[in-house]
Length: 398
Image (cartoon, rainbow, N blue to C red):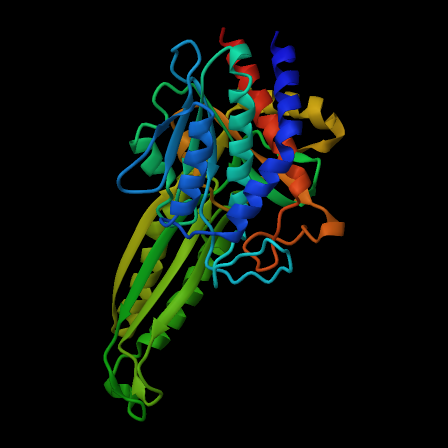
């Protein structure tokens, strides 16, 4: 029964593939930053309402929940897609390149949204054969420091859901391949702000002031030693200072510097230790130099931890579709963050990498790069794996 349903859905996916590519190109031409996904939301809404989905909207953001209700039973499985773009000026030559100056889909969220739309259409057109209801979560603001997943969760996106699947375009694997990972797949992503307060003076009389720039330089140097000398090398961690602002003129001793950055870990105990070690380092430098400080640390998204049973489903379905040789065990986690992790704190699920690298189409450029692009040929594989995994989960729960 379930294999017959999958074949029907796959046939529909093949028939709508060109339409899904057109949708992805439309999204790519009209990218929207975090919190601004209005065009994307209404494009999704218009298509899925015509397919008979029950749509839930929100007053404070552009996220969308779309339910395909079967036999009046609430959805038990969910598929998530993020929708936002990045503040990067596109430098590809594609006819569908961004029409919005300084904004582009440099992380593939246009493909994620298009894949989810195509999956939703394919399931809706085969609703009479499905064994359960399905929910699609179209999420805003994945690229924001807060992450939009919590907004969706607070809005009830996981109510009644027993499993969730998601994917990400991945230019480090070839089109026609996927990467899966058991256990911890991605790091936690925290943010911090450090402010150093000194005392201004004439640049020719430094002894009359407290140089916040010098103190900050010493603090940055000390912070960079935490990972190499205070953390067990068997537990990867990253402390990155991404911005530093301070000073008003070249002949004035600076009295205030602000530093912002991120911390990534894949071990919760190490994660909790790092803020203490950071503040300890900053405090020691400031006290020795006569400066004061303010330290603010925000715990962001947790580690992304895939559920074994859900990985088994995706791996098995992908092997049938792509062949076992094209399903790659990624083995090691990466230090990037992803707010899909918030969903996995509540329900079992898995996140997998969809290969989008095609050297002939120049789609092997890393994410967050002005020349990043997704191979359209990868979309059908994403649709088939997500729909097959959802059908498989629903059949196992019967």
